[in-house]
Image 1 (cartoon, one colour):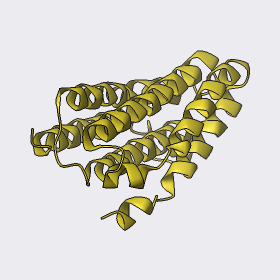
Image 2 (cartoon, rainbow, N blue to C red):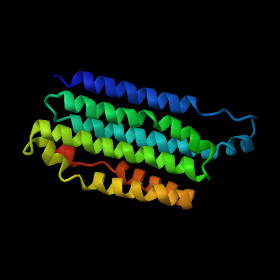
Image 3 (tube, helix red, strand yellow):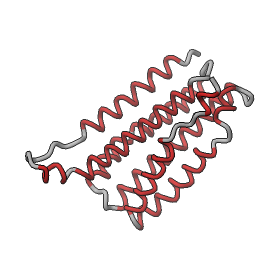
Image 4 (cartoon, rainbow, N blue to C red):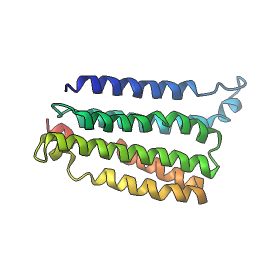
Length: 189
């Protein structure tokens, strides 16, 4: 199967997720700076989530770049990733309204954890299709960054129940960790 439909569908779902997030932003109740400052938690939640969705979009693009074909397993793994990415607007709005409460912050982390697990499964499905000696396998390497992220998300979720600020700090650090581009994909072209 040609990968173009998978890429186009994925781009569409990701674009819709970003659109839903921006539409979820509230307007300030008044015209003063203090009215805008009341929305800082909401704006920061949006920025963090936009960054995460952007990171997944970029890494998805890089992951599919060297792929020559897709199969049913890849389509389902990709759909699994898109499912979890589509939940980011929901948890973003929830955590924006309740950023000091443990359950929304832990739920945000649970969605991020599942996005990371789904990305790992997609990566494995692609490597299984392309082969262990493929350009993709060489570019991805052992996936230490993905595995370390899964461990840190899994740690941040229960920590969020104790300290929502600490859980959020881990999510921010992980976003910064992934924001740094991985140049192995450019080298493998």
